Image (tube, rainbow, N blue to C red; front, side):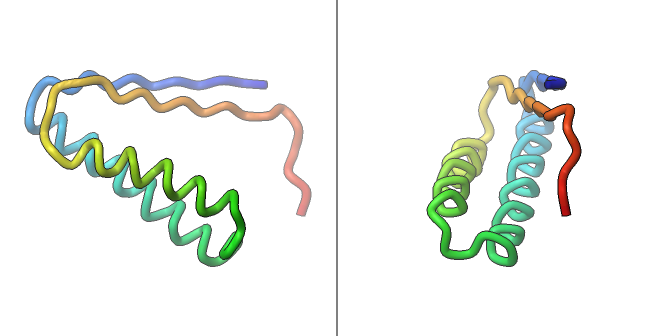
Length: 79
């Protein structure tokens, strides 16, 4: 399994706005994918709840750290 990680230090309103936009874009993408692919499943609802929590947490400008981790299986996806 390959692992990639990016960490963003948030120490200004501009940084905070950028972090908010990143999380909102990810949330919107997951919401749309869940509607078309996993609608009505428990895992889709749980995933959306987790990202709603993240989205809500970054709404108010604040200092902090945003870390994005991507873990990739070394196998291929089947169609």
